[in-house]
Image: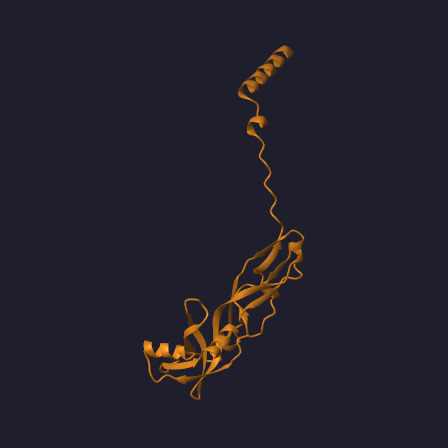
Length: 216
């Protein structure tokens, strides 16, 4: 879960590209806080602190800017060209009691016995839409397939989620299943072999007519 976690920051007194570059050289990350009818606040924060928060999958945090704490969620995280360092963050203030709808990734864990027996693991959902308080947004929905055999499935109704996390899908929707392997298509019989040649059909008809005439 993305439980509230305190992240300490300080107001930025100077703005602009040159100042942002200077902050990054000093191991800081420039950022902005918006929303909920209050003015925007520009802040600076330690790179390692925010990097750890993002890496741990936290979405909602308590942002402490010079002693004033706002509950906020990450709106945008910008990375450098190589994806190794965070260069800017935007956060938006939120009401901790407000419920939001958000897509969270589905994470498949374990080895299904049905796959070992020749079946195919068929994942129907790679993300799941849930509705929950902002401070209970799960970083992922973990699906364990360690007991799944051929012909069996895990559905929405089988999930064990926090009571405040409501899946926005019908209970019988399949998330993942193990299906039978596809059988190779049967070769079609040669139509020429299956049906008599036109000449053969005509000879047969004539023979039938002759036999009928003899019997009269």
